[in-house]
Length: 62
Image 1 (cartoon, helix red, strand yellow):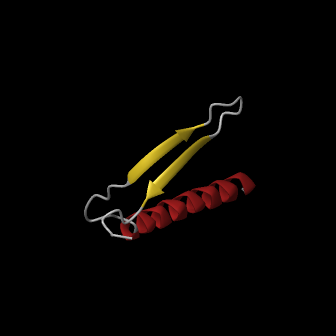
Image 2 (cartoon, rainbow, N blue to C red; image 1 turned 60 degrees about the vertical axis):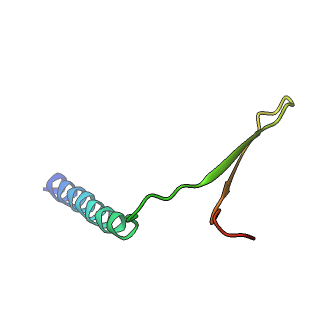
């Protein structure tokens, strides 16, 4: 009996997460593509630091 209750609870959580994921997907959906200008920097030292820099609103004149 406890196994069935646990299984029902786990399946309920999975369905809840799926439904929430669907609503978040619908809220964050882009109507048109967004292109970002980017640049990569690599350090020439022993450390393997990689920097990613994204410039948003690249069409502005600031």
